[in-house]
Image (tube, rainbow, N blue to C red; front, top):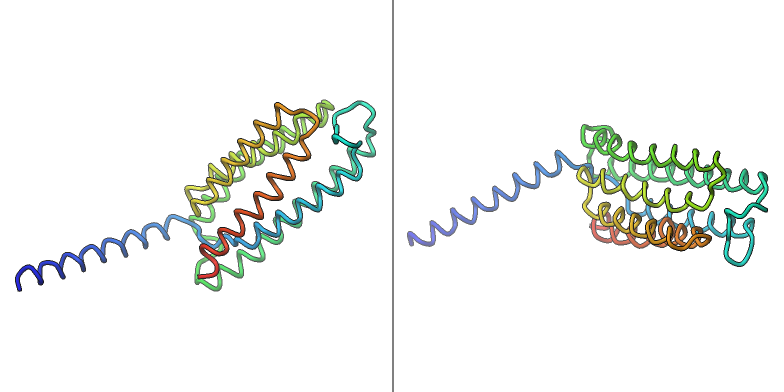
Length: 211
């Protein structure tokens, strides 16, 4: 009888520890990120890659060759800006909806930390890409965007779902590999921002959102 009571007390104690641990984790992590927004961002990226492929020279999409005109570059910039607006807008709308559903504030301390840690590497990569564009060094733009976006995900992952870290590491690896294959950056960009976003977004949706 004594051991049974001791076992029950130990079991309750461990359960209390798990509940405290979950509460502490939720207080330091922003868990309202929507997996479906990642899927949609991936679809947007694939559409954008297809549109860019229609503009760029065939068959290897050598977007850094001298015969590319300023008009081509401007078209690519417009596509990139449209993708960014669509992706950010979709992520915001779906994150707000999920936050309301689970009762989490959209602008708590965890969300602020997440945004700051994500924005610093991302802004650095964006400025770097613009400088490359001004220097007409187009061949490194796709690798740079992949690498710095990946670093942004890794840097922000400690304030949100762990899966974001794996997405970031995948992006960094793809970016580094694409450096070794100049002229094929659009392919790697489509794989990273397109297929990887769809895959990780679907995993996060079925792992967290559908529960």
